[in-house]
Amino acid sequence: MQEIKEKYFEGERALYGLSDAILENAILDEGESSLKETYNLDIKANIFKYKYPLWYCKQY
Image (cartoon, rainbow, N blue to C red; front, side):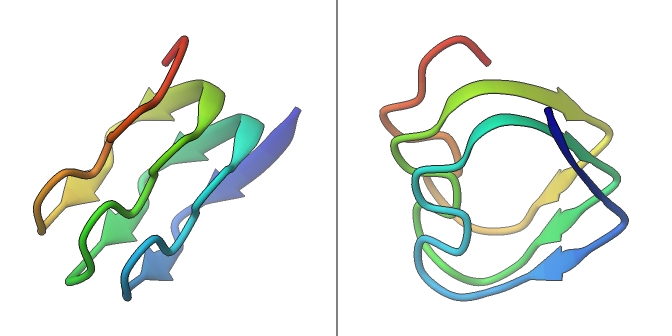
């Protein structure tokens, strides 16, 4: 499982299609649908600053 820790992302669909990952202490700034169509994520202590961060996601 991929680990993404303490990172900053911006822009529309920044992590589109991400799967089988741990997302921890990340900041997802301006950009609609940053985690669109993702699968099997472990999401811990993140900051979502824009709209629709988890659109069409499964098993998060």
